Amino acid sequence: MVAFGGLQPVASTGDAGFALQNGTPTIITWTAPNDGQLHRVQLFIMEDVTLALTGGQCTLHVVLPDGSAYVINVCASGAALGAHANSGGQPLYLVQPGSTVYVAQSSAVTAGAATVWAEFWAS
Image (cartoon, rainbow, N blue to C red; front, side, top):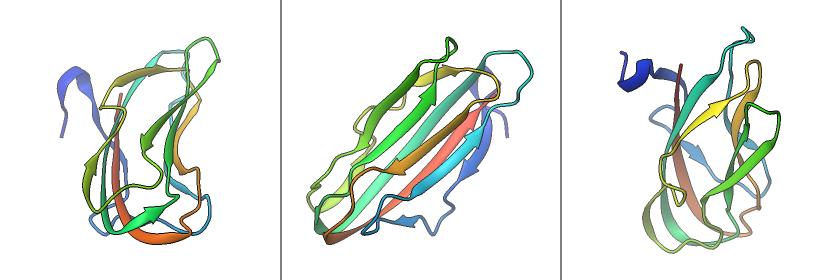
């Protein structure tokens, strides 16, 4: 399947999703080809909080074409019950060739429960 701008799915949590943890694991990752070309990547992410969270912030990490690190919050810490879309929207990023893009849980869940579903679409 190919979408707008030649984007295609390159990584996914799958339909089981990822249960947030009392830790700071990486949730999903993708590495751009190291071919000297800029690459586009887009994150789609949803969170379903089934028991109000303490902690549980998730962040997207990308390397911009000039080598600068860029980090944006995509799931808020302390989220209330219910479904939540990416708090940063679904922007499209240009990334440096050979760089790794990932979503990580940046604060541990010390109370509550939530599942995150995520996909990277890229070119």
